[in-house]
Each structure stands twice: as structure tokens, then as C-alpha cells.
Image (cartoon, rainbow, N blue to C red; front, side, top):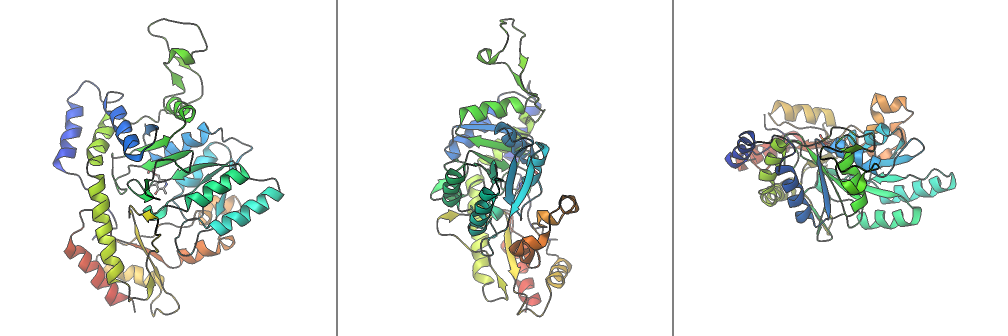
Length: 385
Ligand SMILES: *Cc1c(COP(=O)(O)O)cnc(C)c1O
């Protein structure tokens, strides 16, 4: 089976992990801060907080912004469930914005409408979490301008988008957001095994997140409530968690980071070939925005159901039978039983519903060979008509 995505681990990556295993510190050594500063420098952002997953990063990002019971958080109807769960962990309410039928990212016109209504009923969100689906940025200038008008904070869920660019700036620069979150899960652009990072230009948010990932503990004297100079002394100031990244994971992430730009180049080459080779078929190809460089975490095609003689699920099954490991990213979040139980209904999200009836992720990953890609293209040509 040609998978839809997979990691690319080389000998340097393996050696980097082995080196940590032979060193004095397996966690909280020198490697995590080194990984953090490399990523921050690359993205052009001031602070970065490494954690054990993007899910943890989203959670402490919400907490750092004081998201709590009386608050509302909005995210895109099409994302991985973690984009929504972070708000629920804080006891806040979640709500969804329908997607744009062209880009599959949250729809700016729906967002505007929803904000206008929310303002009238006094139910404006405290935080909005735009998701850069497949690795192409949302329209951040628009979202940023709306955040000033309606007074909400922005957390970019850039789990798909490390290495991507928006208006010639790296995603993660936080030019148009308060915090940006990356995932280093193995199928994402670079991996640390499991891992995530939260980036921000705010020293205050960074310090809060640093504490929250480590039980709410500080060792910085100027933060102490009590007056102690004892050498063993530290204080717990908030209810935090153990969300730390280990040096073993950070070593893998740091080593992978050296190849980030190569990964992005390779993913763009594969995407370009798909763009050219699939344009005649009865499907919609990804819509490319001029001011974006996509990280191409996913290559999502959408079946043209009106003109296609086969159904979405037939095409999906036939591709799997041909050994093409297609996937569907994602089941709309409001459709999951947990969320329907909270009162959500997919019929309120027309574009997300239609996306779910059409979308298929086809294989894309740096180690994909030309033969493998040719096989995918050949199978698509055979099956879709
Ligand atoms: C993968 C992913 C996450 C969660 O990442 P983990 O590192 O696995 O916790 C969150 N949001 C999106 C959009 C993702 O794709």
C-alpha cells in the first residue's frame, strides 16, 4: 500500500537520538531549548514552547489566554478534533465556522456573518482558531482585521503548515496571531515522534505556557510569591500539567528540522506534478492562493459528483484496492457523536457537508518515488471517469 503520508527518518536522525540516550539527560537537558530556538529563529518569532503534542500546545495556548467556563472559542468545521477539544478542556464552549468551498479553510464570509450575529446576541468568541488545512494558510489579514473589530484572540492551528509561507513570511511568525501551534506527529511535515510547539511574540504568554507545561511550577526568583533564597526552592503558581517534550524527542525534531526546507521542496514538486497530471479528471484540485507557499501536508482532491459515473465511496474503495492508501481528512467535527450530543448538526455547515461527500487525500510525502506517484496518477485516471 502506498500510504497517504509517512515520515522520512535518516541515519543522522537515528544518531541524534542515540547521542541523547548516551548522554546524562534524557529530558530537560540542552536539546529542547536548542530545538525551540532553532524553530523560533526560522519562523521569525520571539518565543517558542516545546511540548509533548500539538494537542497539549493548543490546550496551554487556550489557558494562557485565560479561556474558561464563560468563554466561547470558534474553529473550522473541517479539522482534526484536537482543534476543538482544547476549548472544551478549559470548560469553555466551542462553535464552528463553515469552510470556504474553494480553499477548504474557514470561510471569511461565513466568519463575518457569524461575528455580526454573535455581536447582536452578545456571544462573541474570546478566541478563534484558524486551521491551515493541508498546509496552506488561511486569509490571516482578514481574520486579523476582524479580531481588532470584534476583539478576539487568534491561535493558528498550523499543525500542517510548518515551513509554509503567507505574504512572504513564515507561518509561525505570529504576524497576524497571538500564538501559532505546530505538530511533530510522524505524518506531519517534520517529526519528533510525538511533539508540538507553541510560538508567540508575547513574553507574557510564553512565560504562562512555560509554567503550564511543567505543573505550573516556576524556578524564576522574580516570579516567587514567597521570599526564599534557598537553593532547592521553587513554587507552584498555577494548576499545570506534565506536557514537557523530552530531549530524546527534541533531538529527533532538531535533526529533522535540518531537512525541513528540502521536505517542503519535495512536497511542492509532488503537488505540482499532481496539479498538472490530474487537471483533466472529473474532480477539483486544490486551489492555490497567490500569496501562499503551501507545506503540502495533504493533497486533497474533491470528486466532481455531478459528472462522475462513480460515487465518492466507490472511488475511495477502488483506490484502496489498487494499493493506494487514500484517506479522508477530516470527518467534519460537528458530525462526531460527541459533538452531535452537544447539539451540533452537520446541516448547519453546508460546505463542510459537501466537502465530506467529495474529499479524498491522495499520497504525498518526501520519500515518495516517481514510480509511486505515477502509479497513483494511473490509478486515478483508470478509476475516475
Ligand atoms: C495532527 C493535528 C493536531 C494534533 O496534533 P498532535 O501533535 O497529534 O497532538 C491538531 N490539529 C490538527 C489540524 C492536526 O492535523
